[in-house]
Each structure stands twice: as structure tokens, then as C-alpha cells.
Image 1 (spheres, one colour):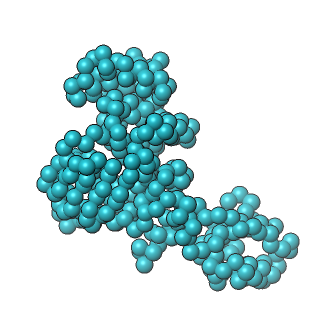
Image 2 (cartoon, rainbow, N blue to C red):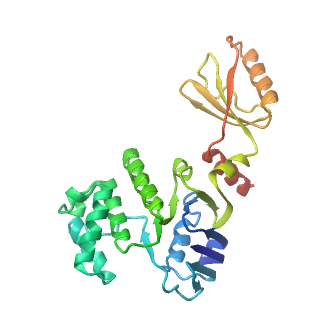
Image 3 (cartoon, rainbow, N blue to C red):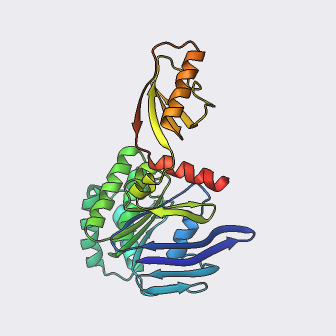
Length: 304
């Protein structure tokens, strides 16, 4: 559905995307994640033909876009990072305007809009000005406009950024529904819990893709072990600087400890408790790593 070959883009002396090779197959929910400035937006804009790459090639469902050219005949819907519709138009007026740009007749726009607005829960707000919508509702309107052309491929650039948690959940329910209907989705996100929802994830850092696989396989390749630890004191810095301890976080009543060796780290933590005269001992359980653990490790590896 999407394939990039040695794709690259620079802005003056800054390399935004460097020699990226990606493959998104039909039916995927493909997540592109990474820190701010990693090159995710530039990457997506090149895929959509909005930015001309300096190097490499984009293939969309068999159509080819080399540097200096734009793919033809590939049907996709694109939802940009920022809300870019017209605030002084109603929901339905925005949809009519967007559909007209693609030369879709008014009857078809109305039929498709009602179907999508019903799915997104915006049908009863179709006469409301876009400026008067909440942040989550604006994102649903932008999604509706991207879907009115009935694309086979949907590209979304951080669609839930800054949206409240409940609206984020609802937005992802909609994406899953679209995916079950056969739509291929590529989405960038800064949220690691959303990365868990994708069938495949690529991590970008400083313009390069440093890892790409399913969330399960990425987590299985995590080189450390993760422990939840309880003690009878609340001192967030208690286990800092211990041998075999890679990272420590403190949440409410427990420590989350990333370690190289479970038993060696446990002994070091018990010794720290004894040094500080802390009674009650150490209670711990090993837990599975998260996508956040994986991407922190990848980012630190890149810095080194």
C-alpha cells in the first residue's frame, strides 16, 4: 500500500528525513512514533505528495513518486496535524466544500456525510459552526472531510494531540471500525499507549527509522527486565545509582525499576534498604515492558 525507498528531505543544512525505507501493507494500522522534530510530519507530507522529496521514491498502491514528481492515481485521505478547516462555516458546509474540491456531486456528499457523521457522533451537530466545536469534535470533523472521498488509505498526522483522553478513545474506536471495513491507516502519534494499538510501529529519531515491527516483537526485543517494587518508605530517590539498575521511577506507593539482572539488582536494593535502616524488607514482582520502555531505550541508544 505504501513503500518508501531511501526517502530523504533536507531544509537547508537540516536533514529532516534521511534514507527512510518503510513498507505499509494493505490492512495495516501503521504507527509512526518518535519525539518532536524526529521527521514524522515531513515523512507523511512526502507520502501524501505535499512535499517533494530530495532523494528516493514513494510508491502508493502501485503508483510511483520519485524525487521531483508526484504519484498519480493513488486514492488517499489526509488529515493534517493542525485543524485546517473553516471556523466560520458549519460542519456540513465544511464537508460540502471539501467534497466539491474533489468534484463529488452534492447528493453523494450528503449521503456519505450522514453515514460518517453518524459514525463519529457529529450528526446532531452538522449545523454548528466549526469554531464552536470542542477540540475532539474538530478532529472528528477533519476526519469526516478526509473520509468523504472514500479513500482506501488514510494518513493521519498526530490526530489526537491535545485532545482529552475520552475523545482519544472514541477516535481510536472509529479508526478500528474503519480498519475492519478494509481501510489501511497510517498514523503518527506522540502517545505510547496509542502505539500499542497499531499492528505495526516504526520509531523515528533525528530523521531516521531506527526500528520497525509489531508492538509485541518490539517489546520482546527489549534488552532489560522491569520490576514493580514496594517498600515501607516513600523516597523517590531511594534506588538511584545502584549497580544493575538502569532506570527508576516512583508512582504513588511503588517503584518501577528497569534492571539488567533481576537477582543482582534485588540484592543491591536490599543492601540499600539495610544501609538506610529501612525495615519491612523488599516486595517486588516482574512485569512486562511497555512501548514507552522500548522507545526510551531506542532513543538512548541513538544518542550514544
